Length: 276
Image 1: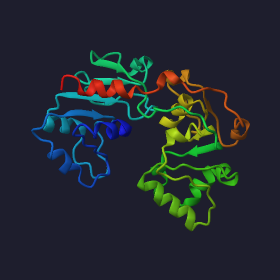
Image 2: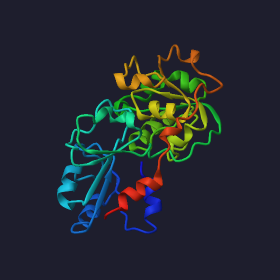
Image 3: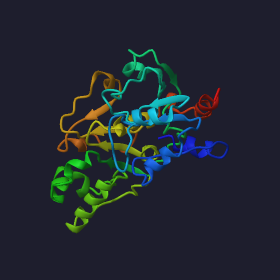
């Protein structure tokens, strides 16, 4: 989420980027013991993933950072992190997102959405399908996924799977089953792709549904009757099912990008390095 901030800061500051699948996750953390550390995270605090040995609360205990910043990892969440954030600095996409942190006395800093640092709309695709909840298909036959989203396959709609091991396993199952797919590179930025399509199709309460609205794309969710929480009703996300989806696919956009979400990268960097 903060990769472009990391890329710019590492030229002048000692920066370490740690992600879930790092093979040397623990080694990177341990190497920072005793250093003056500013910690920035978007993590789900209580969840261990990949080779991750430490959860965030344990990392804080090990490193005793001089400042801590938290930003929402997933704009599709219906609640904030489970951890106590009262002594964290909270980076908000906009002041509206204080909805999830109203009970906290923590410092809140509206800096925009970290993925949003350019907003040129350049349409290359009518629609893109951004599947999530891939893990539920782990132990199922490939035909389960194919049948659930047959409209996508039969109409050659480009599919952008998340860059995740479960995606690659599912893709391989589909290929072995002889399913033809219009696949986009999993390494591409999903948020950037939202500026290149008229319609974003999702299948759950994922971050992409909200990000599509921010990017100005038509956001269509086929999440099996998903009912958004009150906060998300302010985003014009079309909730439908596979049988009705063709009614909502458009050859033009109905929205413009929400420029108030554009990330203030310079302000973020200044915030991080000030008084450190």
